[in-house]
Length: 218
Image 1: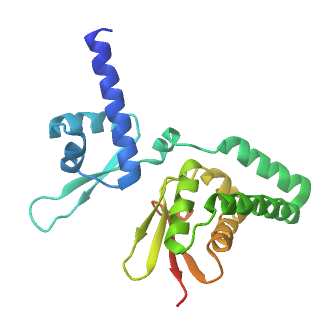
Image 2: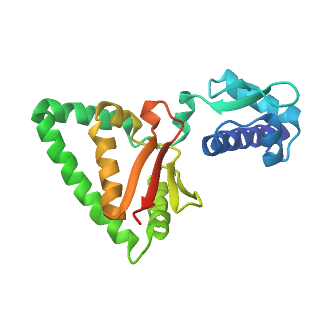
Image 3: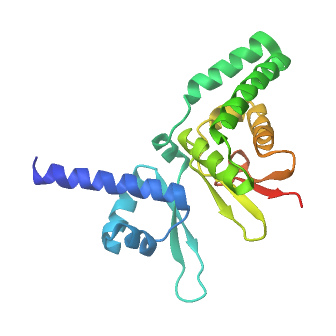
């Protein structure tokens, strides 16, 4: 393999790594990215500018208490092509076809069957998990395997944030709001009636992630 090909492959891996990290972390500046990839600021800027030319990243100015404003780099919607899409075009087409064939009531019945099957599968995966934290950890593993890039954060006050950084069914959910509504009901059924769960950030509403606040009733 030639040196030029080796350099090209290395650049491709680094740029994909930047995309993955920005998906996970949200806005990051050049200094933070340099630290993560152990590259110079100049090298990181070259990668970012290349990604910007391709339409995958953009930046905004963030005012800092001291010094000049800093550029925070973020992904654009175009970068979603690098992450699982859940066969979005086919899903949207099928949803529209089901609406046409069975109407909204028929579609709701089909979603109810889907949710029942998912509930049974999730409960089987959760096994003997007990307590809200343990259940959320198992649920995060399940959802991550499905492409949602899920994690939980302990808030230190008895509550947790359940965060999904990617939505592989986003386009389908945009034309079928029942998918998101039923998802919240699904989580409730998995975690139990003694748990309060509310969505506090929503990708379809313009949020960066889908975030749920979860707390067990005292």
